[in-house]
Image (tube, rainbow, N blue to C red; front, side, top):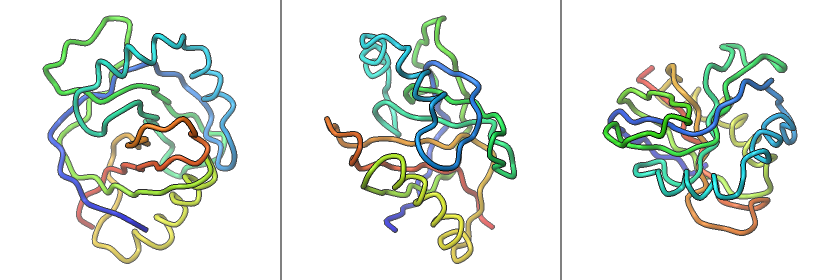
Length: 164
């Protein structure tokens, strides 16, 4: 597993949020419908607004149940990361993210299977053998390289961490 630890100053996640149920395997149809309901020009507007890392359009999960119980609700945000001073249009939802450390896990392969397997491997094999634990904060998925084939794209899973 390709990982790195990143220190990030405070930033904001902005976009369109919805409360959806947590689904462990396969495509989450609630998230899929949420994104599909956004007009194409909205994706372009969001991308133009993003000005900090993680870059590009982001899939953000926040307010996730501590036990990650299937069916529990979470806040899903389709959006971008912006610096604290970036003006935000009034029609967008905002998640304030304090400064902190992140483990960034890079994975490539079919979506969503590779991402779900990466999360499971991180929980079972990475965290137990490294001096880090999850801290409160959003979980972010970024697609760092532009692609027309999202089914096999490289993704970065950004998880907020603190020393164990």
